[in-house]
Length: 510
Ligand code: HXC
Image 1: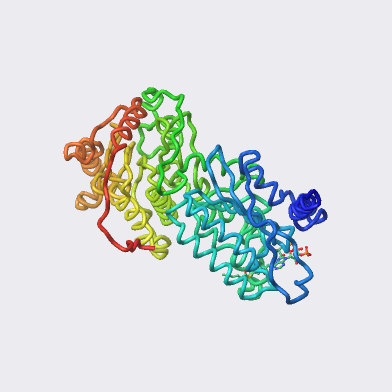
Image 2: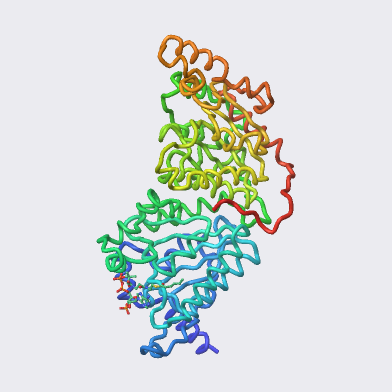
């Protein structure tokens, strides 16, 4: 018996060594952890249950029959994060560059299916050279199998991808269909085709980093939802994110005891909004002052910074926060902001996470760049997302809510449940100056008269009371009491029930 047990121990040890000491050393020299080291940081200590550690590829061509490494370039299984079950797969770059064979793909789809069945999040750690070049179509089929499971699991379980090395070709589309993508700065990059192909096809010369590094995707393309300095930081932040999320669409997010008094007054909020309507202020300050213990997990912090999205807790329960940021482009809604917020709102709605919307928006961004880029369709995404969302929706207008953007930002008209405004709110078709220039065009040459008209328009519309008199705003609240009012609003909505009409699925303006 002992020799059989010794044989198992030997085989396990061999599998754990992946591509061997030399390749592990190379991995470390690049500032990257190994697939297994990453899993042990991501999961609670000792919680990892590995599957398929003895799986090998089935290829024969190009001498592959003699090159078999148990595990075949990906480590899969499940474990816990703060005691809650998650499934994981972690690409092992030390084994055939983490490339995807048919057997490797089958290991991933096995955990994808298990995660969907039991209702637990799945986290993929990527560090790989794409399709296993020696396998050809079997590898392509494997990718498609993974994509298929991504689509079926979308909206059922949270799917998170962390890019921790190369991620190219077939490897990029699975992360693209997951809910969140995080990247590690300087060691990771993502692109459909690499610099060599780019040079051949478009004659552009570009580096890996400039084509698909963490900065590019977290700031410019919006493909990544966050970038972290190293493997350890990225994995710890994923643990933090998981704690905000429900395990599946069949459950609600875990509640955490709050040590922050639900009725805490915040006197400093009475002076947050500057008296000049064109002076910016930091909307993040409002978020941090009203949520539990100032704990806010921001999503896509560096992309479309004119809108803020992220998770926080209100009296122990997770909420999704969407907030215009007057500090960047005056908080205007443009293509990128609309796309970013729409996707976030849909994630929250799919997973029953209530929405808190903080509004200070001067409207949609004008200009040919935006119109040619399809602002109409992209803006409509956010409108659509808010309108279809059935989760509790609490909205607070702090200052501007102009034009179509007023409608879009979780207004009463899109089934906002509780809509509050601060006394500083200005709810109107547009700012007073622009408004009088249009409706009193005849007075254009008379600056004195125009100023008089502007003051008149301001007095009439630059306040929350017209909207409140129509019932579009449920109450005008004191800024210092905002946390208490928001806590109570969400409390009152705990038993909310609302369903949309039956349909196969909607046709959101993609
Ligand atoms: C098989 C691969 C591999 C691959 C890397 N390796 N990529 N083996 N298939 N796709 C192996 C190498 O042979 C090497 O083996 C080890 O992994 C490490 O690779 P290096 O090149 O030494 O590493 P590095 O210099 O860090 O470069 C990493 C890299 C490069 C940039 C990812 O390896 C690379 O360009 N690989 C090919 C990428 C690619 O074109 N993939 C196909 C994409 S097309 P040894 O034994 O020496 O350690 C695709 C289509 C799918 O994915 C579409 C589906 C929809």
